[in-house]
Length: 343
Ligand code: GCO
Ligand code: MN
Image (cartoon, rainbow, N blue to C red; front, side, top):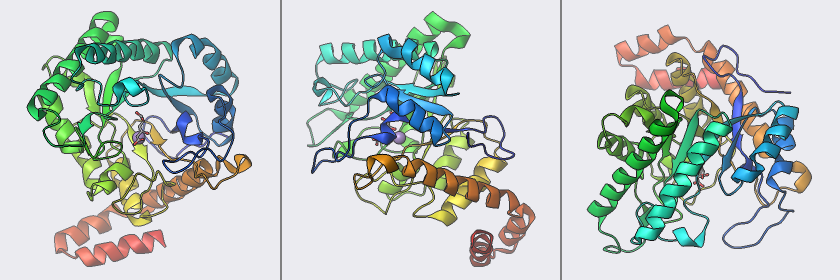
């Protein structure tokens, strides 16, 4: 059964990445489950209530798109977003757009342009750029100012390609910040940095570029994800969103949405409802390696149940009460009110 969110503006169904259902590999050990072929993951996603699937180019290469579309049709799935991997292939070990090697930068651009074609073919409205390996582990390993200009040039080139080839049908590009992992320090590490980068793009292309903030990525940096999302909304740049949870500032955990900070997640739902945000709420979670194959979608069904519950509770939050607490400066009482709504 498809999960839908009551009274949501725009798209009410949920999204998730095919990579969410991996074989349980981590940096310390190999897989604990069979590595299900990507196309076989599609029925599982559908069964878990997901409607909008997301793919990297390495997961769904061009020649497999027709087969994937067939399966997606059979299971009522649509493509929510597509994204070029600038991190998996060893060739991108030191970045793609910011690589020192002009041949690698050229390859990155070619991959990004084919990803635009794939996004269009799959009927997705958004293509994501995750910063992946754009960054550095050692100071002075790259010239930061030059790297920044390379990203500006790279994004401009992709934007120009999309507009020239598809005109008004061009996808929108959502850049996803992350502070670290896999690099010690990543470029485009937070929402503010991405907004600044967008402000430096060709003004004609700027409307095509926005963000895909991920709650856990803000948390890893010790930042408040609600404020990060509000900043995107204020700028008119919330193009996509990745929801999950994270236990404080440490390695990227991709825990089920709603698990670690339900009160903040409730507030996030309130903000998205009030903004009438029409986009896809998508999970970027990771089936933990301790889960058996037959339980692999528990991470999705748990995230979905939490989201549905918090969304419904958020609909009932009395906005006039919040306004009154704000006006009176009763912020602790406001926190108490939110907790009453939650528990
Ligand atoms: C991560 C990222 C990725 C991206 C994905 C889409 O691993 O930290 O969240 O999962 O979202 O690569 O580009
Ligand atoms: Mn993500």
